[in-house]
Length: 429
Image (tube, rainbow, N blue to C red; front, top):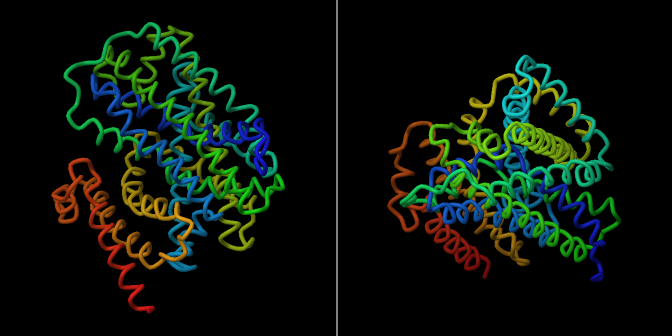
């Protein structure tokens, strides 16, 4: 064992818990639909998905590891204490107000109803959030419950479905594929919010390491790097396999809509047992995500308020809010979530990439300007989702290099960051 590194069994336990926390409804429904829609270009689409979903997750953990700070700490370093906390509160509240209702509604619609058609929504949500509440209530045992119980069961049923789909697919990928497969993969990955979640979970793991008596910055850096890498690998393998299943077996169901396609694939591959297996996968993945989000939010609000909002108060709030908003239904929640995600993602990418440097504190002004610039471009994408596709921001971004791939914001943001860094240095000479 490398000096400072936790035992391999503990690293796998925590990584499994992180994987189960990340692997929610989005990771079950978006890769298959992506694979079916891109057909023969499924591998390119899967790589686009991995850039945002897996590489983004790994880099986010590395950023937290290098700076030994949560998203709140990183944002406060660049935007100031007040605005840094406001900026952090937005994605935390998104996870509570959008993601918790989404995963609970998905469990009812895609796991409970196919097997028990007469169960009312409120009953499914009540059981779901009681279980999530139980897992998250005691902070010291959350990771163990996720890593030892939920993650192994989740992985087992995913492997069963994947092996059958790889061995005897129901169809073959459609040709000629999709010309913008990479972009489609990246845009689909936005929906999972995993890169944002990784910055939030990174702080959660740092707290966990403190609880396991890993206290030095160097040891935290080493352990969080390892945990982030393993988590990203688990996510990358899973998403790529599911994209392939969507491209191959999913081609047999060209009219199936989002969510229904995953169910159809499972049913087609394994019959009624497939329906049961998929229901279990869906329920476990959503429950793991809900418990992880609830616990993370408790940690984050306690940190941001210096203990004025205690951990368990947030757990209660998240449980009540998730149950209440879950009554809205899955399709509406997905619709409301996406615009906020595309608003934040460019600035999150700026924060992640710059925080990878151990000299992060020397470029604060440049990072602040870059985050503001990225938020402006994110606003254009947000407006486009609301129907204003020809807004000036989106039109400008599309005309820039990489604009056709949906990342036209990168070049101008990099330019203003370099300019801001140069002006800042000149000013201080």
